[in-house]
Length: 162
Image (tube, rainbow, N blue to C red; front, side):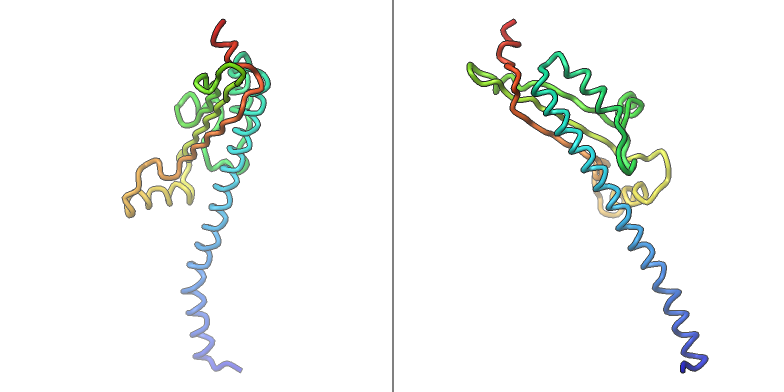
């Protein structure tokens, strides 16, 4: 059985350790949310590139709008038409005509970028400020950039000649 002074000591130790433990757990949760958004953007880029490789240049603008209107899983990053209009996120689909030659259809390149959502105060924005202030990181330290290149099944060399 614990004596009175030992119970007080264990309560004090618990009071000192619990804030660090909670910060650690919240860090894991936010890191998981950021990874979730990264995976969602990667999947969007891959799916968009696949559809663009089949449809050709006439479908690129429709695909950009389609994938820009999808939601991110965790929502830690800016995404959507509103973010595009404020230059916080974008998706671009374009052909790579340099790779297109006779008998080679070329590649379709999908580029996605998204900045962290700083419109609300959360752990991710606090962490970003700390990285910039204390570690001297660039302001783009937590921004996501995804580039996906896929072989086009649509003959891009015909598109260049016409």
